[in-house]
Length: 252
Image 1: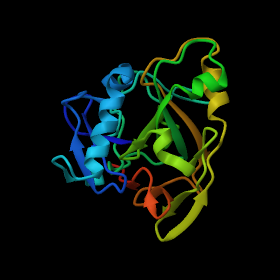
Image 2 (image 1 turned 45 degrees about the horizontal axis):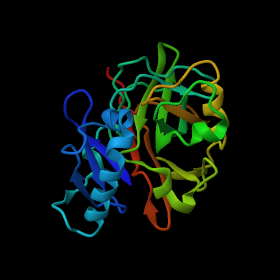
Image 3 (image 1 turned 30 degrees about the vertical axis):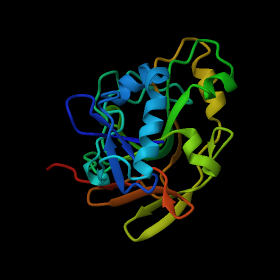
Image 4 (image 1 turned 135 degrees about the vertical axis):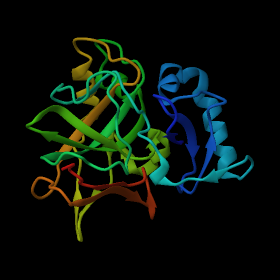
């Protein structure tokens, strides 16, 4: 199952997206937002899976999905963290969509992002990995002049089961392609999600809607004004999460 959010209010409007990212169906009659889904996964996930099957068979009304129109799948989060337990965004901060311009240059990272349900304190790596509900990509930029990081997220987040062979033992089994200007390179993301989640949950539980990143430095130098960037993971000829596409635009 592939999910996204369209801009609406503070938390977006939930939609189900077809596997080829060509179509979507409204899901807000089942559950209005991604955050509500994560809070109540056991109530809504099966209904959304059924909706996804109906969408795949063209059995329900559908609309064209345009990645550029998507908001961040989870427009705000209670906690965004990584293996170092460094908070990237304070609770309530707005997270950015894949096509939103990048307005501060600096050193940046490309990351796999896990979106969790509640993870109890003391969860084992396997237990914690079992609480991962959705997977996506992020581009995080840190600047010395401002605390924290700006986060831009892939248009679509995907359930681990729907990733199939592209997901193995809690790791993305395909490289991420990073294109800066006309130059492309591939990036293999870290593969320690289960241990990272368990480490974060060792001292305190993780709330539903926590984002946990496993990141690698962006190839090349720090981004500067006017630079263009595209980040995408593909498997079997299909884009898994859609693409993060950005232009660095620093206000005068």
